[in-house]
Image 1 (tube, rainbow, N blue to C red):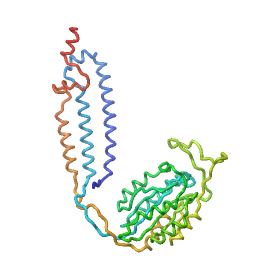
Image 2: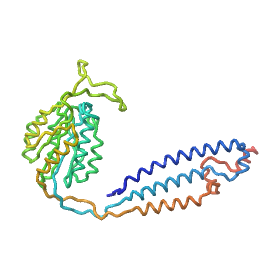
Image 3: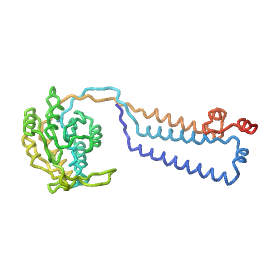
Image 4: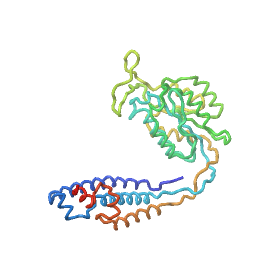
Length: 355
């Protein structure tokens, strides 16, 4: 497993396109100046060994050297040993509604983006817990199994969108049923399910599924995202609103938060409903609820003995810079043979003249 210790240094890679741009500007200026000085035949006579490929090769070497030095600054580390450690925490599954109604912008920036912000902030405050992610609309689909890797959880979280599930609707019952398969029966950890939704257009026998979840020791907490006043569902193309979703009568559909359904689900499993419009209040409420849940000891595998490998990239970068010093901009015999830029030799020119 690789770990990048100082990712902030990756910003230095932005220098590369600047270097390329400056190189192109310099080549343009150089060619224009040479044309003002003399015509092409005279220039070839005055500078017969001038190479067009050498500057490009030197540029490539400098870019590779810079990239290597940046990676060295980032300090990549690799875990050399996988060990089993004992941790105390709770198994938490986040079931996130990705139906089209979550595109509504009655809460900024929209309901789905707000949901992702909430979960991301909650993940930041968690300790030794394990987390999993489910996405659901007309059906429920696993996105991330139970893991202690919060970085992976945030990555999968950001990939969620309302186009990822073709069947529309809000199958909360399917999400709850899928969540029951996430938990490890052998370790008997305390189990928590957070459902983040607007609660609208729920499908299936929710009461029966929540009863089953309660029997398996799963506490469900629901977070309502949206407003009861509601808002239209935008239809976008390339991020620009083209229209709003309409019903069969041609009227604009107004989607509204339905807290009653979410409250009913939470109460059935001794959980609670949380208003999800203010991020700080949601995170605080979630932390309070989790503190009241007893932590369970479980085993988790993780990489240990991380060793730095920056020296390989540092050595490569310095070697490339050293190589660049010895590459002159004059053409050499082996490069002439490669003829990278369709440069013809004098013999070739003479042969053409004889013809």
